[in-house]
Image (cartoon, rainbow, N blue to C red; front, side, top):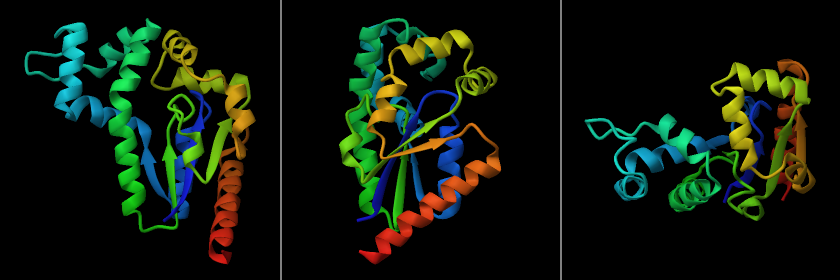
Amino acid sequence: MPFTVGLTGGIGVGKSTVAGLFADCGAELVVGDELGKQAIELQPAVQNAIRKRFGGVFFDSGGVLNRRALGEKVFTDSSHVRWLTELTFPFIHAKWTEAVTNCRKEIIIFDAALIFEWGMQREFDKIVVVRADPELVSSRAVSGRFDSRTISQRLRYQCPVEEKLAQADVIIDNSGTLDDLKEKVELLYEQWINSIRQN
């Protein structure tokens, strides 16, 4: 079995950048957002449940789901958030388990914002939480794919960052340069590899 790492953090901390650096080091990478997208776009049972709850308003004439519009609706109501999380999580978890089973690399990383919200934190050999200075987080988040209103909506339904940091095995601070971040990730990866090969 590979060494499993749960990688998480809030919007704008650079979690995806850290994940990519781990992949560059040689780790296998599984991205929770991609699994969530597959669950919604490729699973008929999930799409049927969405139609049953909301009607066909989020589907175009060809039956294609508008994920952005669905997300905007879901994040206005905590009951919708819980419902969609419970609907998609079994698929996401099954795909992660499958990836671990089939992994031929020494380390596999699960890059997912909702590891704590899903209650998965005890399933990993290590939990890594990425953080950054609040001013940087704000500027990165707004310059990314979400506007400030969407960011505040989504953060409202996530586990507070303080709780994530308190339960982390490793905290990566991404407040510096990309070179600084790369050095931190490479050093951590090397430590894990050395520990794996000594046991």
